[in-house]
Length: 168
Image (tube, rainbow, N blue to C red; front, side, top):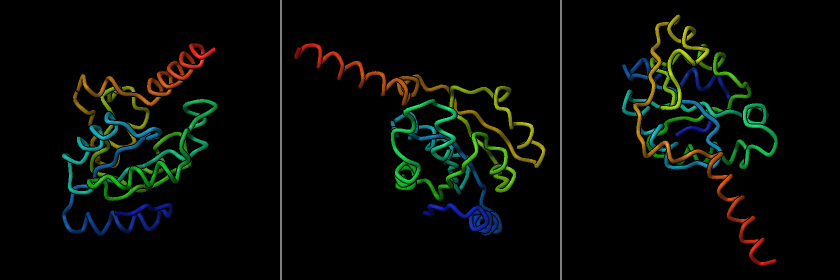
């Protein structure tokens, strides 16, 4: 497994795997407060090919996407947790909010998004299709819908706040 901040090295890794006839799959996200929904998403992505690359939003991109107070874990901690998942082959921390630059650089055979997306709502679908790649959406899994980092944070805050009120 690779934790790679050098995009050029990751491009070479991808070329080597592709040269061996392996199908390259890429998944992306913030992965802040890693939870079972993330694991299901990444496990599904891995079933689509032999190599799974994960593009993880850097800290500033997460702040832009999720707002102040996020991420909870910094980019290195999040990347190390994702890297520790046995079916993830490489993690790349990318600074942009969008995936376009990393997708065009790595050109995965398949780009996967979670079940809360639709192909038509992913702004870079046309970029992936333009180089010959596919976009896939994880099939609906009601169990995964129970998990979201935002919901988990909200639940923690509510529980902590209610326990402090009870003590007063």
